[in-house]
Image 1 (cartoon, rainbow, N blue to C red):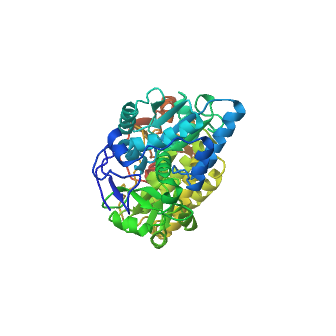
Image 2 (tube, rainbow, N blue to C red; image 1 turned 45 degrees about the vertical axis):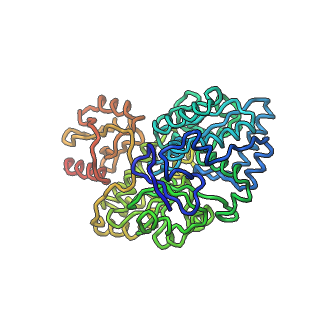
Image 3 (cartoon, rainbow, N blue to C red; image 1 turned 90 degrees about the vertical axis):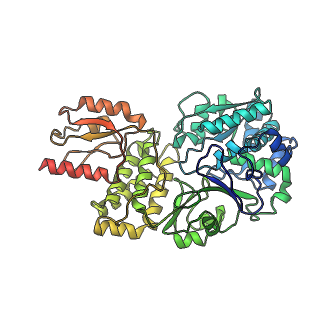
Length: 511
């Protein structure tokens, strides 16, 4: 094991289990420039498209951005589309990493940019691609990649595109839209990048770690690549381990390593629960997490997912439901707001989870959460509602004892420490002067999905900040309020359950 600085990713060390591959040389350097990189990593030999497919199949290379799609199938789909349509191709590196708890791709982009470019250039050469596009949200990562492009004199063949830092920016369709100069949100219908991607051309799109893994696989060859890891999942895995840990770190480990060992390496235990796969992943209880290996198959069997390569244990000093309520509010605010499950279902889900965390009508809130997730699953324009539902339902199961305590006693007695990052770009929140509110309902009409009417025909105002995409509508609702009861104020730190508090204040005023 070794550690080092992160060059643009503050507070996160780089640690290794066994001999490093992706993170080789990072223990002694903040960033590997072109010459330092070449001393550590061989220049991959050019391959034809068929040989690239064969290499990826032999190395059992899967995408490392969340979906774990076989890389060889992506390449083959791009080749087939290019041949069928007689078009050039584009290679896209997804370096957006919109997950608040993830840093593994930022570490590669900031500190080992040439390894990512090695893999992308190998793919571009095999496909005869017109260009390489690196989509990035982090400014330090963008500067590092632009410097690497200059160091390699690839300016005519590669470019960096800066995009807005949002959770959904990294969704494949959203990334392609952003590169094409449009708003970076999911397109609302399934459009395969391999068929129609950047500038309408067949596009090979994978995340930064996938291309880095491709470069390592090409340098070592399939046989040496498979000397570490599992037979079905050879090689190493890059994980971001944060949450209730003493030493937040990006860890490179062979697949198959015990998850408990990685937690111990970062100064933590499984505790009450461990979130695996990120905010579209799932919670595992402490005992299950301790017995689980770092692999797609093992995590799936345990009820989790490798997903975006995020591991977040939650210690006993913070309220699990309060932490989850913050995340659900964040996910609701970060949606594109294009479909019913995101516009209506996720805000309802966030409000109900906040009420559960506050311990007010917790039994009813739990039932409302289950109903909202059932309405969301399988109905969204992208995977955001499904991923949010997975997070929520696994939290209810793993933290069942806390749900019972909040239902019976109104809470668990623990504070919400903000262990799980959940920042949004929202700047304002709504407030109501209940002495003026007459329950006209215009605010609920204007802000459908964000404000709803309760059984007393009064608005239920979310305590969460107003998503940036709804600011204009919120200002319109304030201007239209007949009783001049609604106002927008700067966001402040507040506990989950504020929505229930506002409802209680309204009922008191109504009496």
